[in-house]
Image 1: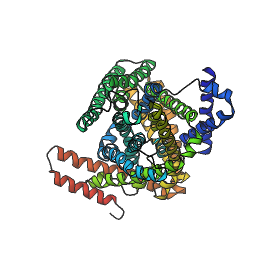
Image 2: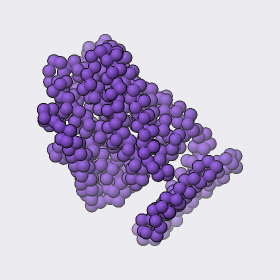
Image 3: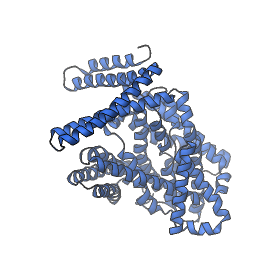
Image 4: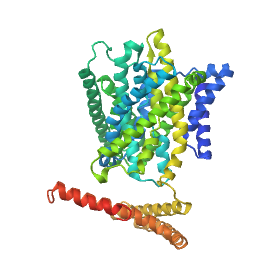
Length: 535
């Protein structure tokens, strides 16, 4: 066990270092590492013997890895930004996922029957349910690396978090409906397909979502309250771990969605507990802990799944894999364009240059593979069906990460979302330093004013900050003198902020009853029109 654990750590760290050097998404290299491990095992039985001591069991995936991946992603989502874009996010994550799953199945099954002639609709539906969840890790990492619209990043990340929960609930319901005919089940399945009716399915779906949300809110707020009463970063890190795993287990015990509970709990703690109940030192400790935990979880999931992949099986089902991938992308485009059309308010609609990026950023990743590994065969026929499903799911995820994950940067450049020069990047960093120094000076003056800092220490620290500020301001002045176009960056940033502030004022006035709804809509529309080129 210890040898296999160390081997996986060595592979994970090597891939992380290589990803930084090659400037490619880490998940891409993890997939390559998984395939490389699979190939090596064929010629190294000794290595296989060591690595196979750590097996991917369904309970291990569900109880250990999933809460880590979901909580870490939800913890960093800004709740107000999420709520401001809730219409687009929820349209993509709920009806978009359901319609996408059904439409993908309806198109894929006839195509698959042309390729091999024995594809049952139940198999197509299970595969579509598994691959309904998107994994934007590599895309969001690119958004952090380049200056991309914050709202676009929030929409893509928020959609992924919500559709993760919806996809897992749908997957459970689909397996429940098809369990008897396919000979497959999952560990958390309650009941069988006998007597399952449409109203019962709808009731189970709604119960899992709303009860899971309630559990997540309750646990998240309770842990947030506890963190505000404790001032020990180790205890508070432990409390967040209790929240992640406790919300998952609590929801499962209540026959609700553990995934949705973990996502909601993570958002509550990230926006309530972290902001109002944790000191800066504790926040740093919590951020670092969950970033490392997610790194480890992703590494183990991808590498251990590599041990399960049979390359011969992928090659044998290559036609089905390619067909499903193409259909999945086309259906994704239909749902994204549909969500764009269904949002009526102009200022809340998805911008047209974003549509191809949102479509192509729907990368399928670790969650889809986790769901695939949760399937358990209940008979001989089920084992063959399970192997077919695993081949298609693993193959589609492989194509998705290798193709979408490596080309999304090129697409964003083509549609004009990124394209900053080195000078622009350095200027933005200098602006960030100026803002940070001003915040530190304000905090220092506040500490001195409250009497918790001696005047002598205050003068020394303030002098050091003023020296940093003066040096940074000189660099900014030199940049602007050498590249006058840099002024446009600051101008655009503040213009965008002022436009958002103006729209918020009109909405607040409408809520207070000072203007009616139509007047508010007209005023907001005027701001949007001015925001357009030539406006």
